[in-house]
Image 1: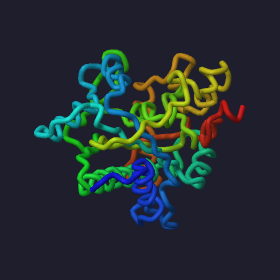
Image 2: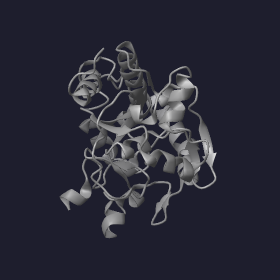
Image 3: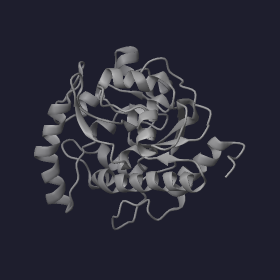
Image 4: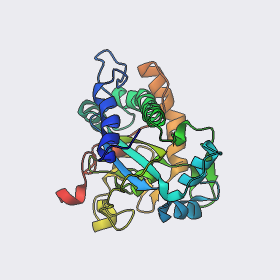
Length: 287
């Protein structure tokens, strides 16, 4: 297939069409609520030096787009500049955010459903985008569906992996990091994110920020810290996000609560993503 004149809009229609029209976009509750509202889509080039910097910072196991692509398509000759990282933001619906906003210790049922069933939607979206592009002649891999995606331990950052969806989104102009490590996007921090890597030429999305913490009120103005106050595990401070303390609270308390009270298994808390100025917007713009 020949790439449409506006390839970015074509890909955006693939992503948004799935979320807006597919019955797969569901929280699987009695109300059959949608999991996500209309996505944001961004693009970055496979040769962007940011991806090399990620590996230098996180560890040698962290793969660049070129490495993931070549491992997936070992017989294809390509230049890194030919690759595009397609990234998206899936904002939680207002009901999910509103429910979780009211919580102080454990996530609401809708939020827990958004974590487990919403991520199922995200995985189906990854496959849908990847399959659609492959069927149209553009070799594509979804990193989190790849056997080359693995959880790892970084000497510098602790819990890590061979590919980060949030860092792909940052490279693709979709947001910057907050005090709690969450990604603050134009539709806020209460969201999930996904990506694919494709041999297709799409102009990169402008990064409207000059550093990785630019949209966080604490880093930009020294104010806020509401995510720290919202954290029941006391895992957020001016020093940042304590991944170990956060994980221990989720594994020891949150998982049992979700299984006992809601009847399914899920991880995640999300209190630091709701009831905060960056829940649904870029807070420095509003400020």
